[in-house]
Length: 565
Ligand code: GLN
Image (cartoon, rainbow, N blue to C red; front, top):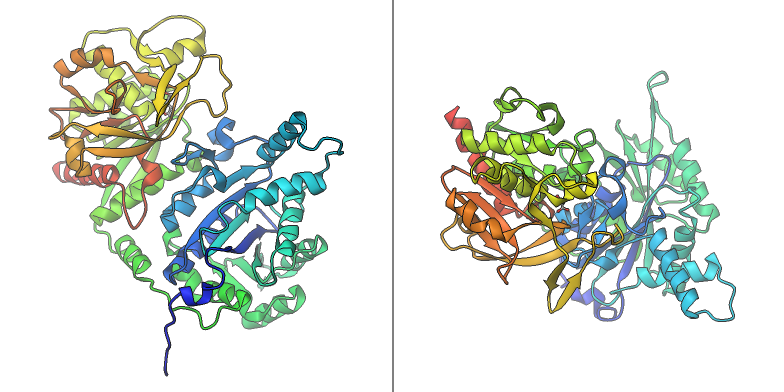
């Protein structure tokens, strides 16, 4: 067989520099089908074939962004380099494609409406009656098209399921968008569920048929159908779905449960998802994929030796999605060391007033993640103390770093009432010496940012990427292998640099600072096997194929600890 490998540019010579091809991803039947994961996996498969991609999420809820939603409610808030608070699906997108998301990759109905209303007040539509069609749909279409000329494929996922009232303007907008573009520029991919009825031993296709019918009634015909199923889908059923849903049989893609989310690119490739998408665009012959990145990821995941146990001492322990990126970054850290990481979520409140040892002794490492509010913080401080005193590896992230500093201030530097201003603000009374204070003014790039305690709650934190200078010879400089880093932030409060001397005198080194030397970014205990607190969120930048050095280092330290005990 003669295989002619054409360079990718050959397909795009007429369109590159002009516009991207669009894949719109919708869902039906039930939520939580793994639409975000399917989108992310498709992105990685297109990359494996040499194409450039960008992924985008359109969410129908009315919050302007998810920043103000409780992690219990919505899972973690994923922060981008340019400081947007976004949906956790953007985390999946980044972890699968390595493409850094931007502000313009996440939008909600709330943001769209707020833009439209702001324009209306400015008089931008003067004389007109403002309506969902065309004003809201135009605003959505403008958003979808941002950066149209930068990539080969733009993948836009619509949150929620078809039929949701809130989703309608988005479905209408993508219908119009595809209509505005030349034919063949946009395709639609729809995810559904095939439930299995044990009593009759059958997979049922009717919900899928109804969901596609719903989609077609608003003018959207799917080109590719991804069908989640717990059981193998017989060819006969596949043909039936194709016939009733007006989709080609080879574009009915089965999606089975996987051992790990990182198996998704290989699994979707095996069942022909990327091929079906390229076929729908008429890209033929398709460039051959290079799957080595994902083969290596799976090899590391499936050939892990041994296990380390990590305690995550936090507040939002009921919903794992609240710390999604941390869980993933720990897995990546395990992959870097070819060891399985067993993370257990421990509610910090259980040992607020007692010795945490009985709860923490069986772990090889302790991680205290980010969080807001006072509840559970005394437990986190005790966890930091336990880790310091017992020589157990500790990674404190954001609030977890602040707690480690308060612990050292109280128990080593003699500031017995050390605390964070955050807790006093919440309680409305002054009870602590603020070792961690509310930051009201800082520098971002070339400009100064100012905030008041009473400012709006949405989007007013120190958000996004900031650089830090690491102290040469420190543990953290060794971990990173460099002294200049850039990491993502999301917080209002900061460790007060005026305690630096006192704390360093007790062995807590300020080993990473903002470039102007004002804001402590990293602390570490000098005489400890591995104790690091960081003011930022390293978990947001970790990838399965590029584990974050802090997580790789933390798991390595946990492994060393497991050999000791
Ligand atoms: N609540 C703390 C602050 O605002 C920490 C935030 C976080 O952990 N992301 O500074």
